[in-house]
Image (tube, rainbow, N blue to C red; front, top):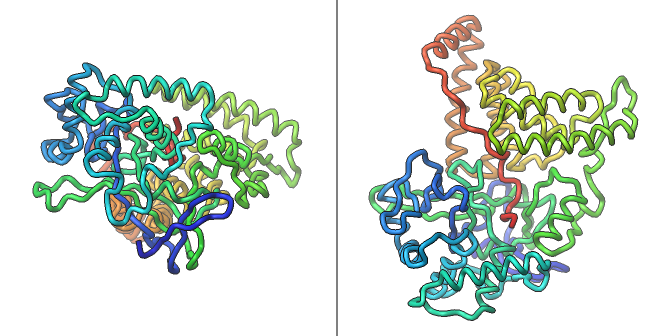
Length: 486
């Protein structure tokens, strides 16, 4: 690879560094997927080839498990699916996603070896499995998975030692990358990208990882493109500088981030933001009312209350009881007002959920109010080119546009577009959709400035002529962790 090389990172083991100076939005490397599977919970709703969410999918006629957009996707996936298909038929049931991914990796290794391209910088055998660091409960789960894998693995395929199978499961556990849907809004599967496993963590990284689902829509397979990840620079990176990404969401406090990293990835984070607890004071801050700071006891009380309400809200959200979600959030926001600062992470979570769910229920005016407050808080905490900030700004901009606030909506959409051009690039589907929205709102804004009355009259007439439609059902906000949580 011309832009990166492997080196010994002090205190971290192997890492990647830049071999030349790069700038914001530059792609340091792209890597095809070694193997990937759809989550068990979404197996009937997501194409097993391109990972697109579709209302109607065509089921594999043999195993009756795999689902595809159409014959094009089914043909494109057959080479990888055919052994899995026969194994599911023979086994009589579908194993869990861990076993399915491990089996696909093993079949790939047996057929083509551990290297899938000349640009691969490491083999699966060289990746850490951290089996010796697993807790007793995790070891029990591993043994169950291995036992079920051996039952599922066909007798006609090459047989492997338990040690090698254990290593593959360990690698999946540590390095299973979240595969998103075509819009990058929801995690729908898990995959393995060997080169990405070499990029070390930093809570304030200089790179971001974006999944490009590839294209299988063309009739001629010559024009198909593979699913791949892209490592993109968030700003200027000097020659020789280590490349880093964030394994967990920066919106967590340093203590929570360190705990999650230790639990999932088995290392102690020593980055500047964790060591100096940068922005922790803002994330749990109390409000200042009339130049008087709210007492710490009151802030602590409302913080603990908010945590309990967040648990209730999440349960109602999982049950798709969105009216209950709104009721819980409104009650909590009322208690938080003038007590918690506008950067307090529990208040931001409530605003984010309210903005999203109210938009889904088509209360656009109120949704826009909370979406704006959420973005204002995010700006004070996130890196200016953070993908989560870009996505949140995009959603807020669209919500303002839906509420009829064309000036604010267009401004937010332009800001989001500038961020996503860095984090996602111009060819990503979500950037293309945002570009179309930017052009649409720009045209409407010109009309608004020429004659405000005519603009609102035309908008009202257009909305009356359209049947009322429900918005896309809200999903858990973004993909906040780089790798899959077990």
